[in-house]
Structures are given as structure tokens and as C-alpha cells.
Image (tube, rainbow, N blue to C red; front, side):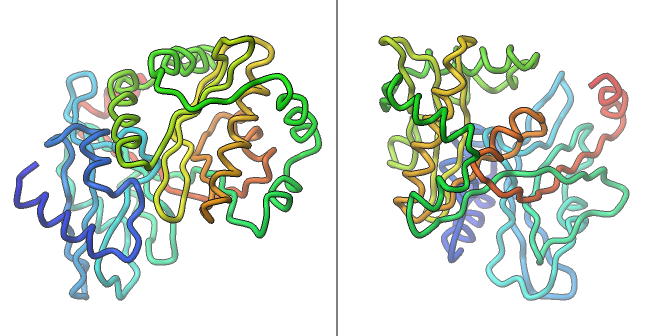
Length: 303
């Protein structure tokens, strides 16, 4: 990333009344690598607004690609004074026509979906907003979850941990249980992200133990308004699911204590979506946008 472009982005970031974790330059350095993320600048048609947003420029199977930064649910779009609604079409057409484009954007009243030249679909995150007290939050949990948490609280101990290697193994186990493979960046980026979050006291890794053995873990990060569930994993033992739920309940209560909403982040896996909703979380839509050019079209047929 060019130094001048980075300076412009950092100045824009500092001007935001509220900038999410995903927009922080240090977060982008941690998840993409310094110099591997790019700040895209767009002049908003018909206004004097200038929009900036970060993307990860990398290679997938040797193909030049523009994707959302790793561990980042949606790409933050920033401007100092957005005075008119913005179409994602304006944002996306500012990008180079690389073989692979795969980005996510948070929906909002000032952001319209792109035209048909880009394939877009709605996905959902799951949100628990701040409430008056913990009891009112837990009241929204379904009955089975409340019963499991009550039992889990007597069976497992929860501790903050630096054991990233065990956590990676738990995450890989979760992917395997769902018949999936972890993302290509997972093992390299996760340790760096955890280190940067802890250094700034903006995140933590917590593990659940049964008889001294770690059986579940979650990584959370936060900004002034939101706590994000960034990654999680559990063993394939029968007790690990309730231990995982206990960890999430504990994180939700921490978010409530800081007057933050808790964002489970998105999943299109039905079982995971149902699990998140068992906490009384509300679906919140965001856009997943893709476009393939040249050889990227052939690659996409096999995915």
C-alpha cells in the first residue's frame, strides 16, 4: 500500500465519529499484512463526498483477487459527510477488474445494492443489543439453552488464555465436524490478530476446560459500540457444545457490562444460525457481492 494512500485513509479514519474495529489501520495490518491491504477512494457522484474503504488484495489459486479482509465480517465504508444515498455500484466499479472479487458490505439506509453486473445476495449476522440488565438478556434465551447453561456452569471452568495452538486445533475440529475446510489464511492470521487485540486491550481468547482439558474456545474483539465473536471452536466430545454455549453467554454478559451490542457475526450454516438465534439474537442483513472476470469465471464454476 502506498504511504500517501495509507495516510489519506488514516486521516479519514480519525475523522469518523465512530469507526468500527474492522476499519482500524492496525486491524487491517494484522489481518491482511502491512502493505497487503488497499484503501479504495471513490468520488460520490453529484456531491462533494469522498468515500474510502479497505480491501485485501491477494491471490487465490494464483488468481489476483480482491476480497474482504480476513476475520472481517463486512468491509467498512467511510466518509466524512455522506449527504446523499450511495449505491454499491459506485463503490465496486472503482475496483480493478481482477479475476476474483468477493466482498461483504453492511446494509444501511445510505447504501443501496449494486446493479446486475455484480452478483449480490443477502446474508445475516445475529445481534444482541445492550439491555437494562443481564436478566432481561437471558430471558430471551430459549428454554433448552437456559437449562444447558445452568448445568454447564457447574461442569466447566472458563479462563482467559494465550494458548493459540490449542485454539487453532479446536477451530479446525469444528470445521471438520461441519465437513468444511478452514480458510487458507486461518492458521497464520489468527495468532497475529489475537496478539494485536490483546496488546490494545480490545480482545481476548477464552477457553472452557473439563477436567483440566480445553474443549472449547472463542476469540472476541471489540470497539466502543460492539463486541464481535471473531472465531470459535470446540472438540468433538459430547460436552463441548454446552461448554461453547457457556463461553458465549459469558462474552454476551461482558458486552452488556460495557454497554456494547454483541455481534455473533454471520453464518449460512443452518445449524449455526439456529444456535445463534437460540440466544434471542436478532438477524441483521448484509450484502455478499461477487464478480468474476476472465479466467476467474472458469475458476468459479468449480467452487
